[in-house]
Structure formats: structure tokens, C-alpha cells
Amino acid sequence: MEGYDDATYGDRFADVYDEWFTEIGDLDACVECLATLATSAHGGRSRATPRPLVVELGVGTGRIAVPLAERDLDVRGIDSSTAMIDALRLKPGAEQIATSVIDMAEAMIPPQPDDPAGVAADLVFVAYNTLFNLPDVAAQRRCIQRVSQLLSATGRFVVEAFVPDITPSTGNRVTVRSIEADRLVLVASVLDEEQQTIQGQYVDISEQGIRLRPWHVSYLMPEQLDEIADEAGLELEHRWADYTREPFDSATSAHHVSVYRTSELGRHARRFRRVGRPSSPAGG
Ligand SMILES: C[S@@+](CC[C@H](N)C(=O)[O-])C[C@H]1O[C@@H](n2cnc3c(N)ncnc32)[C@H](O)[C@@H]1O
Image (tube, rainbow, N blue to C red):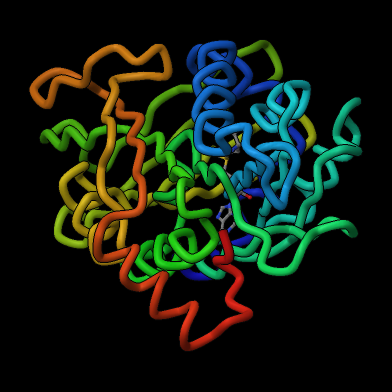
């Protein structure tokens, strides 16, 4: 989409994000599931990082990161939008969360002053279809390659996303999001099935004028995601239908929560990196 870059979504949605998207899924189950995965990946052993280290890609306003940081976890987040990070910073508890404004295709661990050399993450996660906000498969591949380098040897990578169900009605369309006496929000979207992209606009019309809030989705089928993960040295450990760990059904599930861990290929790459680049950020 012309004029759209990695910060556009966040910059145009930051003022309404918490109002429009608070009711997404079961937040308690999400936090519980992610905290359990992080704690078990950390192992409670005497490690370089005393608490499980968790990194959220596309942390946004901290919808998940803020309650997650209330657990005994060292939560950090990256986002390409300064406006989203500014909204996160206004929340109580956000002061514990280290953040970096950066494109998740170049993912890194936001630093804390007492980090040991080669600090590694016990859990990296990307929630609510945010991996699909990357512009194309090449960027998604780069992102997942980076994630596999940031994980500790026992670390996990979690992706929450919708399962594409492309039907004729998914094509170009306009729907009504909300209608009030002095405000109308329409959603227009355009599908490109060959490129696997959906481009959209929330058209927010009020007495004050029109505010355009564009979005972009490069969707992947779960199997395509597994292939990209495999190339990055990660293998699927669990695929659930949601954060309550309901079993995933490829015929009926509309969403998936997929958990990846380092594969044999990844372990080999990790050994090679240790020999070739002793100061690699993978550490762990
Ligand atoms: C749908 S929101 C999700 C926010 C939060 N994870 C949640 O679940 O509420 C997507 C977030 O990803 C950020 N984002 C989009 N593209 C990005 C990119 N290339 N790199 C980093 N962050 C990105 C946006 O700024 C926005 O904050």
C-alpha cells in the first residue's frame, strides 16, 4: 500500500487501540499460558537471567505485556510505532518493561542495564496476528530467523494467528464496524489471493472529519508458518486452537496458538554460531 510503512498501523491506531480491541480473546488464559511456557523454558535453574526473560514482538499498548509483567517474569517488548510505545508507557506497571522501537523483522532483545553478555530469551511471542503485519514472506522469514537466534537453548517461540479461510465473500468488501449518532466507522478491505495479502482501511467519520486507519495483512497458512520456522531451525511442539490449549482442528479451528522450540538443525546452527561467533546474542 503506497505510503504505508512498518510504523503506520501503530501510529494510526494508538489513540483507539485499547478502546476498540480490549475484548480480544481470553486475556487471562493468554497470560497464564505464556507465563507457564516461559517459566518451564527457564527451568528455574540458576541461570544468567534470574527470572524468565520474555520478549513480545509488536508489544503495542501492552495489552498482554503489562499483565504478564505482574507475574515473576522479566518482560520486554519491541514495536515499530513510537505512538504505541507512548501509550504503553502511560500504564501502571509499564516501567518494568524494557522496550525498543524497531522493526520486528530485525528483532532484538531490548536491553536492561544488568544484562549478562549474550543474554537470551526464554520465550518470544507474537500475538493477535501481528506476525502477519509484516509486509511479506521475506520479512516474516527474517523475523523468525532472528527469533531463533534470540532464544535460549530451551526457549520457546509462540505465534498466535488466524487460520486463513479464503472464500468468495473474503474478497473486496466494505462493512460497518460501529454506528453512532455522530460517528460512523466503516471497514474496507481488498484481498489479493495470489500474494496472500489483505489491505484494509478503517474509515472513521465524525463531525470533526475523516480519520483513515490503514492496515496490512500478509497471511500464512499454518503449514507455511511451520516451513519458515523449520528453515530457521525451529520445530512445532504444540498447536492449540487457543490459549486455553483446546486441541487444534485443521478443519474447524479459526485460530491457532503455535509453540516452537529449537530443532536438531537449530541446535547444529547454534553450535556453529558458538564456534564461529563467540559473542553471538543467542547465548543460552
Ligand atoms: C495488532 S497490534 C497488537 C498489539 C499487541 N501485541 C496486542 O496483542 O494487543 C500490532 C502491533 O504490532 C506493531 N507492528 C506492526 N508492524 C510491526 C513491525 N514491522 N515491527 C514491529 N512492530 C510492528 C504495531 O505498531 C502494533 O503495535
